[in-house]
Figure 1 (tube, one colour):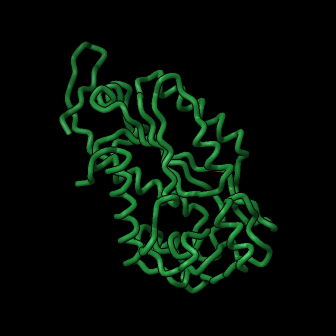
Figure 2: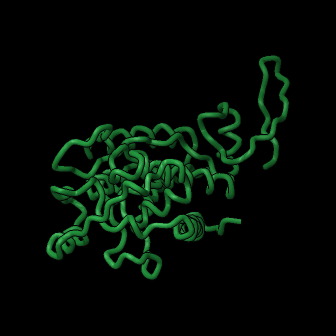
Amino acid sequence: MEPLRRGHGDGTARKRYVSPPLHLKSLVPDEVRFILERDARLLVPVGTCEQHGPHLPLGCDTIIVECLADDLSGALEILRAPTIEYGVNTSTKRPFPGNASVRRKTLHRWMNDLLGSWEQAGVDTFIILTAHGHDPHQEALSTLRTHQARVFTVDVFDLDFSGHLEDGDGPMHGSELDTSLLLYLAPELVHMERAQDFLLPERQLTRYQRTRLGALPEGSPGSLGRPSLATREKGERLYKMIRERIATRVLGAPVP
């Protein structure tokens, strides 16, 4: 990336190199303005703080979108916003220690306020990255309003994983996909010895696949599906596929 100019009070300016990923929170206003003049897009990772079974960290969804935001920002030199750490959690029959959720309306209003501020500062396109398929969460992010800026909401788990997963039930909460991705991105945070497969009865499975509103059933360890099928190698393939699809289909450029 070409050097950015940082101004001084005496009217002079010096150059410094800002190496990608381009983290908004680590830049001064002049640097942000310079970047947005070159590319007025902003990557906004939105995570959750909720259980994904006894084997995965509470920040599972957050870690996935943070890595994607960093990689896409680093490869394509697109500005990357600070991570939104909380979303609308899937409801559960019992409380799980550490879970923290906001309501759909809260997330929607919060994000509208943030996007409005960034739009005034020169952003013309927002790419919202999330890895949480709960319908109220998705509704909050897919109905955001701006004056003129475009908004693209990308749900990682809404991509087509046909032929990429062994579990015939597809992506499930805390199952093969989540676990494989974390084994690749943050293996030190995964406790595979604690992973528990939990299969839904056919009627419940059909409802889960048709709508993403239902609570996790009683007896669930906080996850669904077959995390036992997860591997690091599978996670690497899946992650690179997800990153490439977002880069080409949403950002219009393959990752180098």
